[in-house]
Length: 450
Image 1 (cartoon, rainbow, N blue to C red):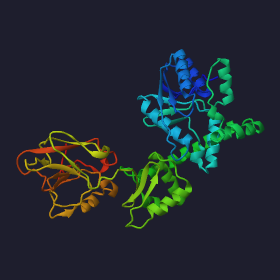
Image 2: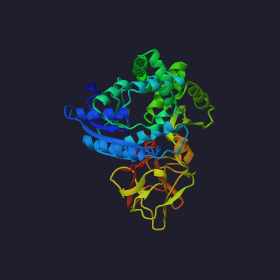
Image 3: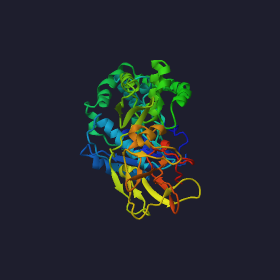
Image 4: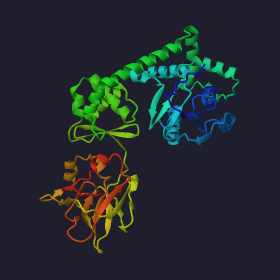
């Protein structure tokens, strides 16, 4: 029955194994196909700690994998009861673990089936989702650098039960599946049985509708690909002016794809209208901000940015007592180290014995850059470089005593340039990806740090 599992050529598989009927059937079927399709299998059990029986289920899953000679691993997660509900939090934690565990070239395989697809579709319908949400669960999708496969989506739970009975499989029943307080269980226990009784092919028809919605979204992706390429810059920001030139429908379609590209759940139509009015069209001198998941939506120079939340560093001073030792920067911003200066480009001079080196953040200063006449404020330099306001205080500033010498990859001042004697190159390792578009290593007026 399951001999035509859609594995799309993947041979290294990590199986999400809960011990329930669905994942037990998937695990068993893949074990049967292991030799004929040269599959390399592993299984993982996620211990949520929600049930008093979870430890017993862990032992059961370990035993089943041992019998099938499939390598087994488990991970514990702790639910904190964050906003969005236990179901959403548990799912988020599971997939976070999957991303950590997956090896290069390995695909995650889960046992979602036709009835699960029907439930997902109806839940999206309840939320008022559009075609993207009604596409429900794809049979294959990217998960980080790996793939996530759902090869059972065309099969009903009844068909899985038949397979399990034929092969005399043993599985566990999670008592929480009988709690209709959860929306998905409410549909599964109360609504879908009545729909199936009235229309036996209801789940199959819903799956077909989800596939048609997915096809429409894929077509829109193709049609809007060139527009996205025009309005999204290398730094990931999107052009407000370009968006404003189109219809509201096209603008919303582009924004939805931009959010998806950035790993943000697609906002509702009302949320899109709000962010357009409050962020994109706010007055020029405003610094609007709107939280979108774990990121912050901001506007700068007529572009929208989705940025991670950086802890405040303004006024922070970090001593660098030994220039020969790399300096670890705060808040995961990487580290700085000095190297022997190369023969080309401008480099940082060596400090005198009387000068202490410090790294500072979020400073105000008036400085004279190498290669330019006159002085200017640090704020003006940030503006000239086009560096967004919220990123500026995360760029380390190198000071010799109270004199600003340079900002790595941005500028070097007259106070820091080599005039005679020994000099250094400056390397910034582990830089935050959001800063990289503005940290340039070029010749001329800017310092060459490599």
